[in-house]
Every structure is written in C-alpha cells, then in structure tokens.
Length: 429
Image (cartoon, rainbow, N blue to C red; front, top):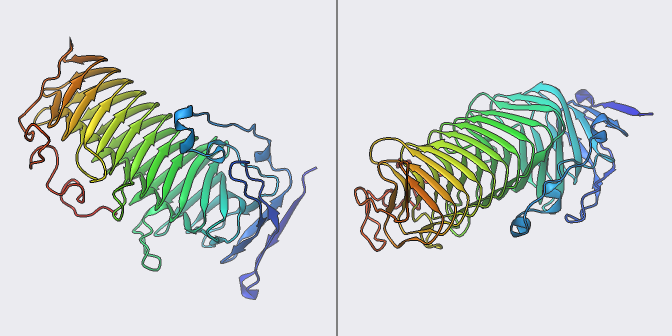
C-alpha cells in the first residue's frame, strides 16, 4: 500500500522543511549522499514511497562505441531511480530551493515559480518532471546556480515551462533561459518537455547533453545554448527560433564550443543558423531537418553518418574561421545529405578552407553547389547536382576568397567573424 505524508510549510512561522533521502545513482556516476530540500516560501512537499511514476520501465539510449566517451551511463538512462525521491507539488509564487544531492520530483501547475539548485560543486541533482506546468514572467523555471551536474528528466507525461516577459538578472548573472544552468546539464526522459521563451530556451554555461525524450522549443533567441559543448545522442527535438537553433560558443576559450550529434530526430526552423559551433560540428548519426539562413556552421564541419535535409537562404553548410585552434574544413565521409538553396549569392557547401568528400550521398539543388578556398578533393561518395551525378567538384569563385585559403571579406564570413556573430551584433553570450 502506498503511504503519503504531506507537510505544509507556514510562512508566518518561517519554518523550514527537510527530508533525509538517499540518491541511488548509476554505477558510472557513483554518487550517493543524503538528500535534503529547503523551501524559500510556502510549498507543499509530498513524500510517496511507491509513486505511479516509479512503475515505468527503465529505458536506456544506446550509443556507438565511437561516441560512448561523450555520454555517461546516467546521461543515457531515461528513467530516474525514485526509491528515495523528494516530491513537490508546485504552488504559485512559492519558490523551491534544492541544496543537496538527490532526486526531486515536480508535479502540478503554478505561476512565478523558480526551482533553484544551489548545492556544493560535487553534487549531482536530478529534477524529474512528472506532469508539471510553470509559467513565469521574468525568471527561469529551473535555475542551476551551483552543482557538479544536473539532470532534467521527464516521466511519461507532458511538461510545459514558459517565460513570457523580460528576464531579470540575478546578482549580475544574465539568467536568460527557461532552463538556465551555470554547470553541466543533461536533458532526457520518456515524456514531453515544451518550452516557450522570450529569450533562450535551454542554456548551460558548461556542457549541455540531450539523450532522450520529446523536446519542443519556441523562443526568440537560441533554443539550445552552451559554452563548452552541446551533445545529442537521442530524442525528438523540434525547434522554432528567431535566432540559432543550436549554438555552442565560449567567449573566453576558443578551443571549445563544439556540437556533437550521434542520434535523434532534430527539426529546426531558425531565423539565423540552424546549428552553430565555434570549433567543430560533428554528425555521426541522427535525422536532421534544418531550415535557416545558414544551416550548419563551424570552423570544422565533419559529417560521417546521418540523414540530413537542408533548406538555406545563405549557405547550406559553411566552414569559417571561428576558432584559431582548428584548421578550416568541411569533411564528408558518409551519410545522406539533401541541400536545397534559395536564389541569389548562396552556396550549398562553402568552406573557407578545405572541402574533402570521401563517402556518403550528397544531393544538391543550387546555383552554386560548392565554394572552397583551400583544397577540394572528392575520392568517394555520390554527388548529384541539379539532378546530374558528377565526380568533380566545381568551385564558385563569385563571393569566394582566393584559392589557397586566404580569408577576404565576401567569402562567406565578415572580418573577425570568429569573434563576431553574423549580422555584426557583437560578441555572442
């Protein structure tokens, strides 16, 4: 029989609620400690020994050996261990503060609620969304101030997080996303997470991983944003944004800021770049449907597998010097790639350095299929341009730079684009 205990915290008495709980983490994380939650304002805390969510079958995303070092076992496990979880029924205007490692389950519907994680820098915290709706005016729904790593995991449910107004700063921190983390963040699960934002959707100032679940983001700025890396192993991701769909950039370290995709179904409709990385953008699998000005942009674009469909109004795939730590190139060794370009000064595949094709199937509809400034090499694969198969690479010099890799204005990037965002708006984030 299920036992439920409800504790109500009364603000007038300024009491605190705490509950000891143990985290049963996976072997790869090897984390186990007491779990305790504190509440900033009046909330209802519910402890349930055998919740309905705990009956779901444990699932785990599988990855190839080549990408296994990108994800931990706990990243890939789509269900949380709820045996010692702490439960919250959210209530309007009543913030929740998590200060200890553990598993915390959110349920219910509320307005102007921020769940803040402020734990020691060795703590691993898992926030389980079990049919929760939070609508805020000016603050994140989930805000990670401090932790080693936070997991946001959906149960087999629909969860909606929304911010409708202008984000306010927190002690000089521009908390400009519905889920905002200053530390590593993994999003996974078996349910649906719907995010609507007047700024960014999900932001991590370290690494951001997506390994499962259905994620729908509508936002005015970047949908998935991280400083060090964005890694996607699985999931059904739909993005509608006025700026970038996936954006990885670190203003202080140009050796990071990479995007890695090994699986999942990703649909992006972007006002600017569908996917933007400072260093490398690597696709080892997955199904990508990309719509944007430029759909894939990085210093190096490496495509080894996957099904990629691109419709772009500027460049379909672009490699430009955004990082001095990497040579500029586009390299395609596999996959199925369809590129349809808009009219005008557009290139389907534009490299400000080398263009190397050794495998895969590339089907291009464009006035200018290729533009490269370094070495162009095609040693394998199938290339079809405007309905005709070809075994040679043409090179579009109009709008291109000089052969040999010189980077001049007009070759697909503005001067200093490694430090500037497209459009001349200055440093990004």
